[in-house]
Amino acid sequence: MHLDVCHLRDFYYRTGLGRAAQRAIREQVLRLWPEADAQTVIGFGFAVPLLRPYLAKARRVIALMPGQQGVMPWPADLPNVSVLSEEMWWPLETGMADKLVMMHGLETCENAPALLDEAARVLGPGGRALFIVPNRAGIWASSDQTPFGFGRPYSLGQLESHLAAHGFRSERHSVALFQPPSHRRFWLRSGPLCERVGQKVSKRYAGGVLLVEASRAVFGPRGTPAEAPKRSPLRILDGLPQTARNAHSQSFYSR
Image (cartoon, rainbow, N blue to C red; front, side, top):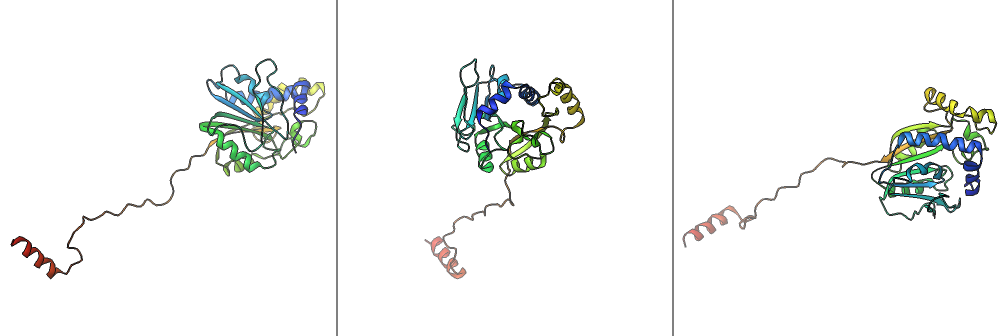
């Protein structure tokens, strides 16, 4: 089930809870990726709330938004970098991404395996991908007041196994959104404290979203090495009987 881009925009930019969620997740993204100088940064789904810190120094920032969701111009105060895209056919060259951020993309995708294959295609050598999904063990996945209450939530083990099946190797993980998914003013004011306490108490279970950093898996050669057979020098008389060889040799040297 895809959410409409207008719903996502209104949540993240026009509600206090959405701004708190944006801040909490972006802090964890920047902890994992503090910079992207001269790199190509790709976002897919609705990742634009997390891409702004990279606009100034990245070589290129592109925000892909799937057609089922819809697209909006972003950022509002700078030249547009958002692009309407097919969910499983991205208008990008193979291996061009140094960093790839996917949020509100995997859990709502109609064909997750094909989406992950496309993500693996565009990720370049040495590149890293960051997959952000609802945490099955968190309370945000059970609330329909936020976008994280839609689609398929994941446990950490499920997400890492899913990524491994499509050529990714999990490197690190983090969690975010420890505050309750409530619009009440008390919880909004308490949000930063909830995040600080939650990061110290749990790195897996309590947070509302999981963040898994992954790289392209590189497989070495398999099987038992086999040596090529050594070729013996060509001998003209091979195959002849020994008596014939001797007779031929005698007649040759007697000339």
